Image 1 (cartoon, rainbow, N blue to C red):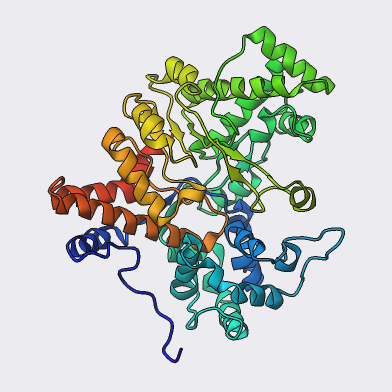
Image 2 (cartoon, rainbow, N blue to C red):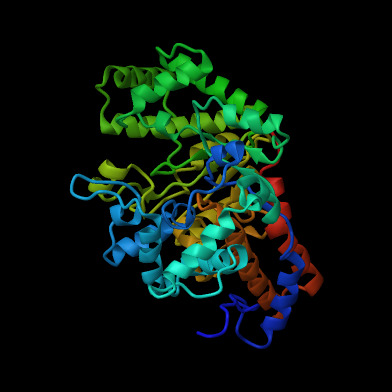
Length: 472
């Protein structure tokens, strides 16, 4: 193409001529609101160290498992994309070659949300003027490399450039929080917040569990030799996270089960785990028990409890063994919430101290389970479309299936859930456009007045996440 690559102003807005003008007005009212990013996975060290990004491949391609998984599905390999080495294949170390493979596979992203995010990142943030392809790859690489080398493209500067008011990182439960302490000393303590992630400690049959318990004990200065000391160490670390500004915990279990055990059974199973004799069934029961315990602790200390179950992690064993978790092989499964959350909601659903946000990747449960639950229990909020569902049509379906029962006020607002830092403004922009389109239809159908739709749009984009993740 001879003309520079640009993005259409109405992208992702409704196509029909009745609702599109209304959607434009609603979107314009929220387009420039600050970003509240309370559920994400950008490494805290990026902000603490504030160093330049290494190269275009390390910024855009290698850390984004949405991107790499699609290319792998079309015949690429993770080593060829720079993710790591296997016994049979060394990792590609030439960032330009990784970038060429990404650009050559550009057509495979057509119709996906990854395409939308990447377009926004490349054009609006990195200043790219040509579509990616095998022919344009080197020119684009040079453009992007020059942009990210500039001093105003460092992580802290991008917080301002992206208008990110608040961003939460995800930190292991045994974290020293030293990076967050450095940020606080530098004046970023109210802007970059930690999130308490105890998952490895709650699954007794994980290979690293005993080592991770030792790490927890060292961080909390508690000798974890018993179940009671284990709970003490978890409480101690939660207190340290609250003191460091944390607003939430984060739980990614396979099941949403929250059935508590009696103390004697919990102690017995914990002791078996320490001795290496715990069974899979006992470990599963303990993980559900610990979700109940985490809810009880949240009711005490005020940390928002984020629960996002229903993903079978590391579906392919060889990539997990070679590269570790989060490499694109996590697949959704059918998830049940009504019975699973009943123990916690029966105990704490009306407790003023508990705030629980439930996410799902199983669309079937929005209207059948989660919206009815969020529509009655004051402690529960319905999380935004997450992971495989943060896509244009899936987000529309979410609004259509959940709003009539839960309303808007029982939702958390949008969360981006990403390690790909530069995609954060793209993801929030897409959510604001989709919400504008949905609200425009309600206005066109005379189900909302325009002033109400404008108010709801500001809630969804900004006010609801601030309220859902309020300070403990």
